[in-house]
Image (cartoon, rainbow, N blue to C red; front, side, top):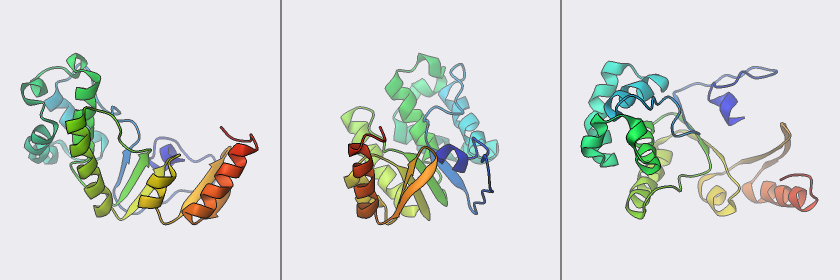
Length: 180
């Protein structure tokens, strides 16, 4: 569903209409070229997010400061460690606040310093968005950020309503062995 909302997949039936700028934090490296430098990937990823290359230029310094990648931004991304690539992708993806934010789980990768910094930025990013669509198996996370829940099983809506009510249906389904 998240990939359909993000425009990656076409709906198999019905129509999808979204009003506003959508940003998806589904795959941190989508739209990045491993042979391009970090600087070049800022522009490439910006284009993937629907931002004109000239407009992305204004975010380069802010992204560089947030990621703390320094001179590595002049090197090809294929030379980065996994953590460095995540820093770059996350910094680019969160430089402009969307109207609708799509997330699959919550950022939980990177060293402690970056993870703390990213958590603060992500919380601010979520608060500034008009709508958050979050897929997660974490009840505390869902209770913190969501006021409505939908439980999908095999592409169909099984339950929708409050987070607690939907979570109870999810747990009953898992306990019955009908879902993984």
